[in-house]
Every structure is written in C-alpha cells, then in structure tokens.
Image (cartoon, rainbow, N blue to C red; front, side, top):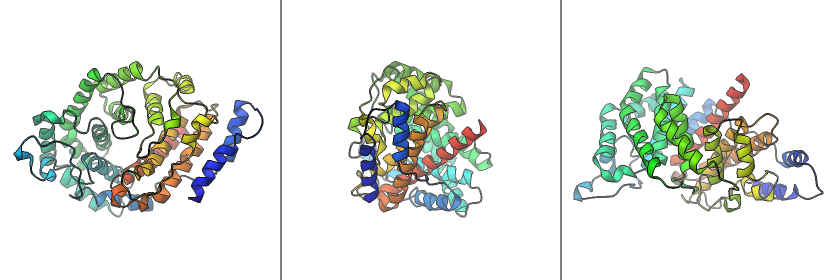
Length: 386
C-alpha cells in the first residue's frame, strides 16, 4: 500500500509552485516520478507465466457459460459444445490462454515446458475440434453476439501468431483455425455496418480495444475488408472525439482504460503525422490534474475478488497502451518519456501483485502480462532498428 501512496503524493506535489512552460512542467513531472524498471520477459519469467495458461486451458470448472440454452438439447457440458476453448473460466480466456502458450513457445523454442505446451496446442487446435467450434458459430443464431467483439479479437490475435510462426505444427494449427477466423472477421464487418455508436466501457465490450487487436491481425494477414471497416468506423466515430473523461477512470472493475484504449487504437488507424494533434485534443496534458487518474496505478484492496482483481489487468493494459503511444509520438514530444515512465510504474505494480489474485485472476492475467512485456520488447526492437 505504501508504494501506491507514494504515486498519489508525487502526483499532487508536482503541481505546487509557480507558473512554468509546458516543457518545464513535463520535466518536473518526469523528475518527480519514481524510476522503476518494467518487468522483462526472460525465460524464467516466461515459464512462471505460461504455467498459469497450461494449468487452465483444459480446466473444465469453474466455468462461466456465455451463451443461452435454446432447448433441452443444450443441457450438456460446455466442453462438448466448444471443445477447443472450454477452460480458463470462459471462452475468451481459453482463447487467449492458447495465444499465451503460442507466444511463449515462439519466443523461447527450447523452453523447459515446451513439450507440455505443444501437447495442449496439438490437442485443442486439432482440425476436428476447431470444426466443432466453427459449427457452433454457423449453426446457432445466438452466436451472432457470442463473445463479440472481445473474444473474436483474441481469436484473430491467436491466428496471426500461428500464421506467422515458422513451425510446421504452428502452420497446421493456423490452417485448422482459418475458417473460423475468416467467419468471425466477416461477422465483424457486418456488425460494424449496423453498430450506431462505439461501446466505451472499461471491460470486454469496449470497441476500441478489440479494434486494436483486430487491426494488428488484419495488417498481418492482409485482411483488407476488416482493416477498411475498422478504419471507416474509427474515422466516423472516434476521429472527432475530444476531451475524454479521464476523471471517471477507473471504474471499480475495469481491466481496460477506455481513454487509452481509444488512443491506442487511433494510433494505429490514423496517419502517423495526424495522430499527435488528435491526441492533443483527446487527452488532457499529462501534467494537468485531469490526467492524474491515469498517472497512478489503481488501488486493489482485494485481489482475490475476480471483479476487483480486474484492476490488476488494468495496470498491464495501461502499460502497453502507454508504450504504444510513446512509440508513435515524435522524438521531440515531451509525452514520450512520461508515457514510458508511467508504463513502467504500472507494469511493475501489476506484476508485483498478480500472483495474489487466485484462480479468478491468474486464469487471464498471464495473457495480459505476457502481452504487455512482449509488446514492450517489440516496440523497443523496432525503435532501435529504426
């Protein structure tokens, strides 16, 4: 608790004093923030995290059903209905648990748990099981909204990870998954044609968060229809947004930042030279009191409560969103260093407490931790290469 108090005090003290230029205020804020190193995804940490996904992707209970029973024939175990993605508490967590295992095995091919990862992937991403998942989405009208769009976005992210893996089995699993991914991509395009406004909460239904993952998938595999649909919708509904209500963040069970989700998504869909000016009007200055809620990691008083534990994931999401924003801003932009420093603070705090969350948190937090750290590494590598 002491560390969280420090962030709050520092955040308040930086504004005490006389007037100064924006650059000086930014420098003062940066100087006041603790210098911490973000957690790095080395092999030892990868083993620690991927074991959480290994332990849950085939764990049948507890489970939260996300679809409705239309008749008595639906009274059957969920693992018979969706035989690939039935563990980890819910469908979307099972999906991104497989992404976590795939990502770790790609990054660390000789990892000690590699055989266990391959066994799980080989079993759950078989042609037979993924065909059953495909039939679930094609044969039932109610699946029109099942896991839309959060779970669909993670499925696309999993597919893009598999399809770009120089591994014979990985390519076969991607081939098995391709019909389902293409179906959900088509359904997403159809959905965006009739969606009259974005969804903006800090939980699963947030449109911008899904767009960010889907955009990366579409760019990777060349899905021009989905890419164009996301870009068109974003230009229509996000491009004119101003003054995101940062004061309302976070809600008590948020695991996403609504404001940073939109900013992150727009950093990918907007032209790079136009984005900084849009961000100027969308987010308040980082030294402003209105930005204060995003400077401080949220307080998690009961990490084992699955809802309250969402706030741990929020720290990871804020971290990777801030890293993404820093990566697209010009080198001369004073926000770059502030975003990087705040990202490290959030990432470190989230990692320090994630293992106190019990199964209600661990069944999904491994994905958010791995995604945050792997994206940080990717952005760093891109920056150095550039």
